[in-house]
Each structure stands twice: as structure tokens, then as C-alpha cells.
Length: 102
Image 1: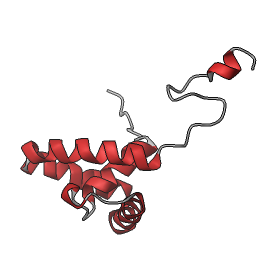
Image 2: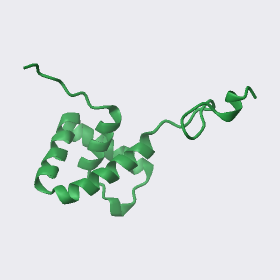
Image 3: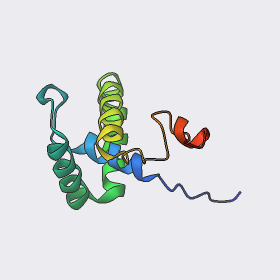
């Protein structure tokens, strides 16, 4: 049997850190608050520690952990997503102008 290492993506680490942070969905945090909370959680627990806290919550309170992770993934995706470049449209592909040579 071979040991397989799991390397989470950056977006997964951000979502796990937001999940482990003190921010609450009901606070409707601003992007700046989200960035600060993620930074604080990673500094306090480390990336692996955030993942461990997520796992613990899923074991202890799976019904609430699911909703919190959905929220954390959505917010982290919005806050940390790179802005679309001029050569891409909102779907992530080449813009119509570029496709048509405009």
C-alpha cells in the first residue's frame, strides 16, 4: 500500500481558514474583514490546523458544518478570485472582441 499525500488547493485553504475564523455569516463581512479573518486564522492555526478544525466540526456538528463550509467556500471564492483580465469574458474564456479579432 502506498501513502498518498493530500495537497489542498489555495482556494481550499482559504475556505478552511474562513470556516475556522471567528467571522459569522450573519455579520455579512466585507471583503476586507474576510481577508483579515483568513490571515488571522492561518497565523493562529496554520493551514493544517484550520483543516483539523473543519474536520472536528464536521464530526461534532455535521448539520451546521455543511452550511458553514458552503458559505466559506462561496465567500472565499468571491473575495480571493482573481479579477477577470481584459482577454477573458465573465465565463473565463476569450472575450468576444478577441475571438473576432476586434
